[in-house]
Length: 450
Image (cartoon, rainbow, N blue to C red):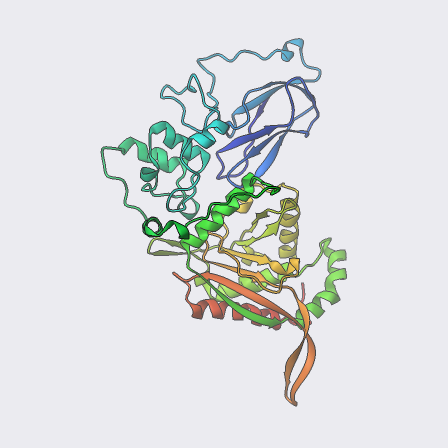
């Protein structure tokens, strides 16, 4: 039986083999993981379809494999004796499996002396160009094989997240290379190129400092996900001029309501009721009223998104961060929102998210209060233009206005931090938006039904 690379989402066409968990000749049980694979953002495992023996591994660590292609063969328990010997694959009909991040040779078959993807990691261009734009190992190795320099790579318009050049962008560019002028760079690329020129003209003292570890220091290499996060954060800061507005909200009634209903809610719905679904409900309502924070930027064009897809930043046991997306959040009531939040959070911590579940967000919320922080200045999750951080809820003395006069009372207070892209969201809109979210939370009715 052949084990095929499974489909991992509508937009995912290939994956990188990270590590084999089983050796040839090992016994495997149904649903037992046999290999770790990775797409652009999600690491996952491929399980054995049924009991048997792993006869042959058809790809190696670091190989890039298309969805639906065979990656291994197993001998199925109870099968014929011949099943224990891998059958030869006729050359005329065998579909090539790429063992390099570069493209297949012109005749449609893999190159006779393929380079391993892991070796190409260091041989290709740098992970980021002068503009700070990230280039995947696949794109870097295609560029290396085709003789595309980093300077030339920087001129290619990217259709990926944050202007990233995808494999399709590079392959579409290659046929006309040298016979026609490159496509004009996008506004983002022009901006980053200008910033790169300024940086190049600046004395070296203002650049990235060189760090030399002292005796006894421990050097910890970033894992794959941490490198992606690092590149994404730097790209976001280069792309968007960040502004952050803060509001303090009195959420006493919200806290009292949750305390009153949380036990009944869990008994009836089988879900814990946290504050996060309520925060997201308030953000969604504010987006409906102020849709210009639910936009993306393409050069000098503003794309107002029809759907409201809320990204929910979640901390992983490894210390890394991932942002699963609640799609069409405006169509969910509080029960549906609570179920979506709990499900995505649990599967994120267990590493069970699908690639499509961390894509397509239009606005992000991060709950820094989970770590006891009262406020934060979150970095925008590109290509979005805004993100909100919700701080810890604390009891504080506060002024209470009543018809009989002002009083001092103990109230449950929290800070909301709203970071936004000043290219398209001015202080008036950014400030009104976070104030509106606070108003919705403060006006939470004790009689609210779920």
